Length: 467
Image 1: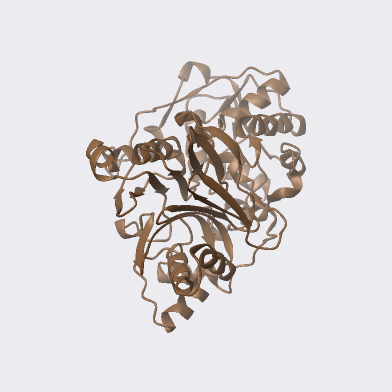
Image 2: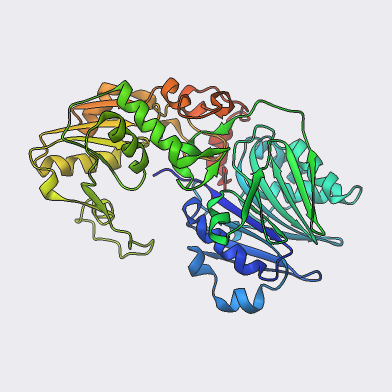
């Protein structure tokens, strides 16, 4: 499974700020399903509610209607990987120093976490969590005594390296920041007279908010007194937006990096059909990740589209775990085949990516058992051969099947008659500005180099690579 580490939402000067944040997070639940949090400010008091689980599990009417008072709110949803799955690691991260009450919500991954953390601990800083996001609070607090909050945020960003989209509640101000390369998405919108910020525009759609624009790389927005001010924090750097947002992570109805996600995925499928045609009875996805690329492949090839695997949409995170002898239950409980569509058929599967290959192998084995005559697979991204240090769960090269195996070996392992990955040229031909994207997980060309032994050190010390 691929994991995106978090989603952000914030709203400024709205009478139902907490409730709006709830729905903004709900719309982005796909970006994080482990913990959720909302912090509000009423002009005098800052309040928070955080918990483990999905958004509806963490918040109830008492929280939204009575306890989370205020007209400013910041919300966060999170996945975890190497960091501990603990409530103390849930965000937004809240601190108080002097007259400042600060809440920080972070999407991305810092590549110099260990270097900064060791330096700050040697200087007397005490860390409460295992997340790299806490670094921002220490760096901001260190500088706030001698400068404005905007300058303190700017100084903090100058010390960190890597990927970060940030939303900060600083007393009566709402601040949003993106790193100089713009790895992670962040957008500005407006509902009535209130400004909203979210990782994806699907949050705006639910709230009937107007999407105004994307926040630019290296930009800091400060919202106060119904006014938005923009500052450029860093020298312009080449854009290196995460192309996996378009391949997999973002909701298909979102606009991300000025691209309509649905259309990009269809274009990837069409490019696959041109690159690797195959005679098949029909095209099918494994729901839901490959659906839109499969639509594109079907349209370009003229082959019919069938949903031969049906997803159970009511599987929650807490379904009763099977006994040990019920092998592959976790796969079977999520999707189930339409048996009449499979026996004797030449099947073409379209999926968005292959990471480890174990899940797809189980599903292909099931299709074989049901009598499929041939099984071919087309993947709407290039082979993932390198770990990601910017906020995707490709943190170890040893986990990636394409890192040490060629295409034929992968096809044999999975049990396929043929396998083709979309070329880098085909992928970049599916977006409007191909020079703006990070391709490090395919090429190993890292825009920001991690510190020495970054991944190994983080694993050994349980420091979270990203949230």
